[in-house]
Amino acid sequence: MVDQHLHTCFSYDADSGNTPGKVIVRAVELGLEGIAITDHLDPLWPDDEFPSIIDLAGYEKALTEAEETAARTAPGFHFAKGIELGLMPVPEALAICGETVTGFPYDFVIASVHSSPESPIDMEPFLTGRSIREINEEYYSLLFESLKVYKDYDVLGHLNAIDRYTDGYAPESVYLPLADEVLRLAVSDGKGIEINTSSFRYGIGDRGTPSQAILNRFRELGGEIVTLGSDAHRVSDIGAGLSEGAAMLRAAGFTRYAVFKNRKPTFVKI
Ligand SMILES: [Zn+2]
Ligand SMILES: [Zn+2]
Image (cartoon, protein in one colour):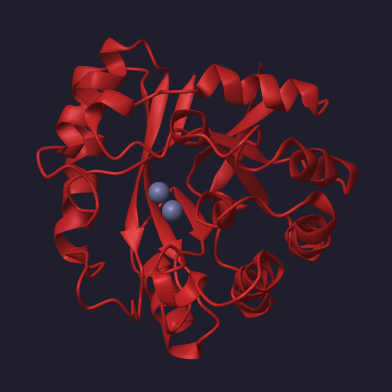
């Protein structure tokens, strides 16, 4: 299988010893057929206490070197130079995302929401003093408003990530209509979503990321592109949960998953 969501030492929240080289070695040891490294770019991140900063020049150089290393040491192993964008519907933030993606030959771009302009979605200011419905409405609106403007991505990352942070889970009647308009837009733009298998490690009730209902809906709407990724932030989580993710795909009626190179998907049977 191919794990297409991995963080290395270039992400502010990843293990500092987790170099791209170590990630490749571990992925090959595990028998994975390939990986995408997808470190964080979160423009205008509002939390000064835990800043999300990336040395972009250093990261892009490391990706180029890692691609050469993979080609030399593991012929046939699929290596993709990726990035995980943290979108927010602020023109300056989206412009930085766009310039970054066009400024380097990335193979794979994940678009996620990690923060509002005021607060990361997992922090008190975003989560306290309002209902789960209101929190979900703002979270999905951050994504939807961003995607109306921003199109230079391949898949949506951890679509229902907000479920991880609310006190209890929004019922389907609350979150599915909100996710629905995001999915419709993604499908009409020819984009995909990911199954982020980190949910099998930390648990969000009986729900995956996305939930099975979101995945089913994506297929109903004509969505075809789904990638699998562990979202590992340390070497020991690489490849975790990919088979559970594939089971979700099958349950939704998919027979294949997408693997990205040069921003284009090819499809692998499951
Ligand atoms: Zn993320
Ligand atoms: Zn991630």
